[in-house]
Length: 263
Image 1: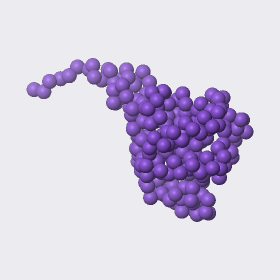
Image 2: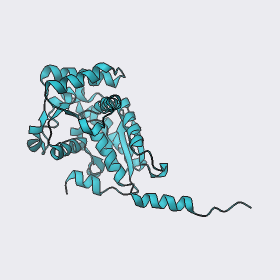
Image 3: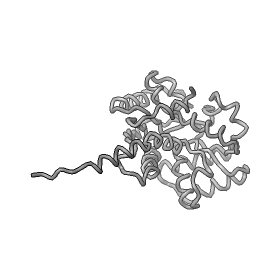
Image 4: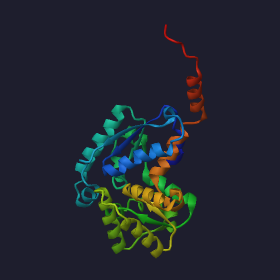
């Protein structure tokens, strides 16, 4: 069974989701908002249980991975993951793509609880087969995080990598989004680059791109899934599978049960 199948089939109605965020904090906060926006329209008792640990003190991932100080990053990363496990999380989402190479350095039991955003992205590419422009940080690009994945060989022909100048512009946009300097310029840059590279869809290869993709969806009125592979949105889809009609039936039975007046 591959990791995507495991992520989907292992979910159950008692799942408690942990999100390691703060990388940056706005992206993980937006992800939490997305979870409950996407699961709205049902009784709140049916919505996913999510514990968020937002720790903005985690060192800059690109800097640590490129300057050889990843041990500092690993200390914070391990601490956050252990915290989520101690809180009772049964599945964990690490709300940062650039830090994903360090997942393999975690204790095995933590690795098994973690859903890889890189796995989800490449699996989605292989299912879709359109051309996608990759939006990610300099760290992710220079570390070859996608290129070193086992599925890259099969997916590579569907992924367009921007040139150095455009990659630098994407990195700047991501870091502006981190400090809440989002603007229409970012949406225009996304549109311009998609046009330049002849694609109609892009990969949100950084969790800040989740914020930008959500804004693009709101402004255009188009469903986000039509123009973007967003692994955080894919996680939400996995989450919602655990809340089936069985859960709704149990909830309905509970609210329909006879009430006993106090005497």
